[in-house]
Amino acid sequence: MASAPGPAGDRPIRVATLDGSYFPPSKTTMLLDLAAQELGRHRQVGREEINVAELGPGFASALSREDLAPEVLGRLRAFETADAIIAGSPVYQGSYSGLFKHFIDFVGQGALADTPVLLVADGGSERHLLMIDHELRPLFAFLQAFVVPASVFAAAGDFDGLVLLNSGLRKRVRRAVSGLLRLL
Image (spheres, rainbow, N blue to C red):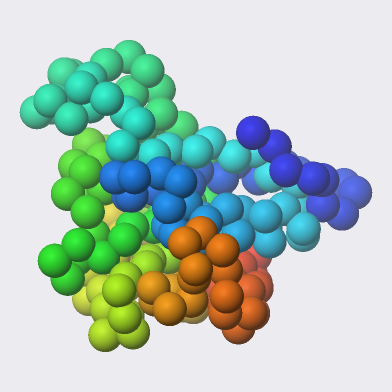
């Protein structure tokens, strides 16, 4: 799915969004969409949307990369070869979701080396904010990705269902995407 073109002459950016939510559409999905749309305001974007809840048994039952269904392997390859990644998960038990980690476990060693990554997460309260720095950031650092310093966290109070209530969240998304653009 492509978003509106950015400034003329820019090479389209291949962006993979990884959604760790089990129940899309979700707050995580909304945060990923906000970030991808903001990026699309500045550059032409080709987006590969990967939602772990929709990958099916050809993903969830796989124990090795060879066990992945062909369509899941295609999504994984798109993730590994993207120019940039926007990855997000709701907070589950103080960390990212299990299927999010299951997907990451199949990423080839070195495949994300030097790839810019923007992190987003949502949780029940601001007390979950540090999940990004204590769980997501080290995970992508291990994969040798360049993680954008600014990340985006949203608490349950920032939304009414899937309606965004906190206008400051858009400002945080703009700042984080600005950091992603600098890495591109």
